[in-house]
Amino acid sequence: MKKIIYILILAALVLTVFANRVKIKNAYLDFDKEPAPMAVDLSDVKLSTIIELHELPLEFNLDIPFMVQAPNGNWDLPYQEGCEEAVIIMLNYYLEEEELNRELADKEILDLVKWQEDNRGKYKDTTIAETANIVEKYYGYNTEILYNPSIEDIKQEIVKGNPVIAPFYGRALNNPNYSGEGPLYHMMVIKGYTNNKFITNDPGTKKGKDYMYDYNTIMTAMHDWNNGDVESGQKSVFIIF
Image (cartoon, rainbow, N blue to C red):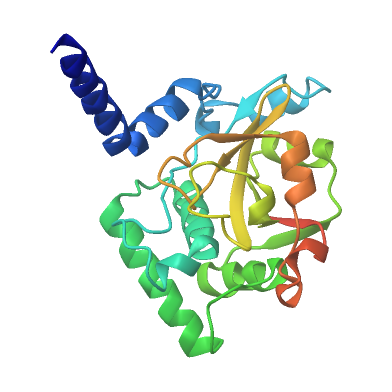
């Protein structure tokens, strides 16, 4: 009789673990996540003071609002293809020093998608140059594209207060929070760094705020759209000023 009870208890435990496997996985990922450095509000820091150091800080993290590209958890179109829109919306709110919430994020994505459909005829899979052009036309900012940037180049822009927008072969990022293999093409904000990792706002997951990737992952996975042959795409980024 005791043996049967033990078997039933064990079976119940196995079923409980199986039923809660996603929650258990997420709890483990949250526990294992390395904390990011405190974000810097550049309005409280004199940029000249940073530049006069003549060497980069050991770690740096810009205070950029985060949004997931599916603000309400709906990953159907256009949200499924909304990483480029999410990235530039985050940066607009950063530059305007405005608060970004879920309702605003959803409206901003839909407005930007409609503008692209009306003015460009499409909104999906924009190259780094096309995304920079959208920023200039839609928001009125200036942009600069950097080709084949080094780790040092990216760090220098971040310390200047310039978040870096970068395109990726998403499946090489190996983010455990992505569904399936992850996106073929993806775009993120690189907003900071530590001694061995870049800090991003990754709109492809609700856990993407201050998400850290090691330098090698970022530099290896960085590729432009390249007509769908993303793995062979140009390594490039752009900044907004």
